[in-house]
Figure 1 (cartoon, rainbow, N blue to C red):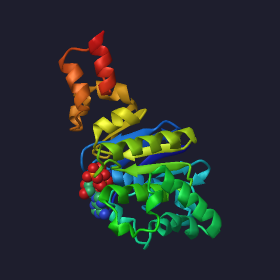
Figure 2: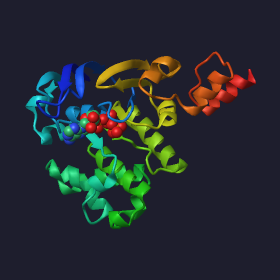
Figure 3: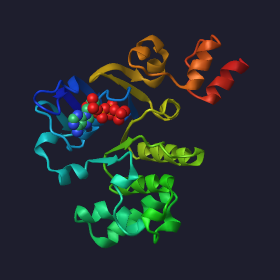
Amino acid sequence: MIKVSDLSFSYSEKAPPVLADINLEFDHRTTAIIGQNGAGKTTFVKLLKGLLKAKNGGILIGDYDVKMKTAAELARKIGLVFQNPNDQIFKRTVLDEAMFGLLNIKMGKYTAEKLAVEALKMVGLDDKMAMNPHDLSLSEKKLLCIASVVAMDTDIVIFDEPTIAQDQAGKETISKIIRELKKKNKLVMTIIHDMDFVAENFERTIVFNKGKVLLDGKTREVFSQKEVLKEANVEPPGVTQLGDRLGLKKTILTVEEFLQECAK
Ligand SMILES: Nc1ncnc2c1ncn2[C@@H]1O[C@H](COP(=O)(O)OP(=O)(O)OP(=O)(O)O)[C@@H](O)[C@H]1O
C-alpha cells in the first residue's frame, strides 16, 4: 500500500539528516511508529502526506508517486489527524468543520453533509453539530478532527498522538474508530508516545531512533526486546514490564492477558 525507498531528509543543506535511508513497506496492518522526541516520526509522516518533499528517495502510495502529486490529490489518499486540534479547526460549527475537507475536494454539498454526519456519529458528536468547535472540550475537539479526517474516506489514516487529552472513554472511542477503519480495509497508522495504547491497538510497531528504523515487527515481538528498546529510550507498557518482572514467559500486552497468565 505504501513503499518507502532509500528515504533521507534534512531540514536544511547544512543540517545533519533527520531521516537517513529509510526503507519500509506498509500493508493493512494497524501500525504504530514510536521513538523518543526528535527521532524523526513527525517528519516521516509529513513526508508521507506530502507536506514536506524529500530530495533523496521515494514514496509510493499505491501507484501514486508522492513527489509528483499535489496536496489536493494526496488529500484523497491519505488523512492526517494533527496532534493539536487547534491547528486543524477553524470553521464556526462542528458540522461545517467536518464537511470542510469534503467541500474542498469539490464534493457536492448533499453528499458531503451525509458523510460528515456519519463520521460525527462514529465519534459521538452528532448531537453537537450546531455548536461552535471552540466551545467543545479538548477531548471533543480531537474527536472532531478525527471525524473530519474519517469523513474523507481515505485509504490511509494517520493519527498524531491520538490519546493526548483523552480520558478512558475517549480512548475507547478512538480504539473503536481504529477497529472500524481496519474493518473497512484502511491502513491506520499512528505516531505516539502512549505505549499502553500501542500494545492494545496496533498489530505492528516500528521504532525510530535518530532518524533510522531500529526495530520493526509484530507489536509483541517489538515490546519483548527490552534491551534494544533501551537504546531508543523507549519503555515497554507498564503491564509488559510488570509481567517481565514477575518472570512471566509470555510478553504481556494488555491487562486481560496479564490476568489470564497469572491465573494459569
Ligand atoms: N521545521 C523544522 N526545522 C528544523 N528542524 C526541525 C523542524 N522540525 C523538526 N526538526 C528537527 O528534526 C528532528 C526530528 O523531529 P521530529 O519532529 O520529526 O521528531 P519526532 O520523533 O516526531 O519527535 P516528537 O516525538 O517530539 O514529536 C528534531 O531534531 C527536530 O528538532
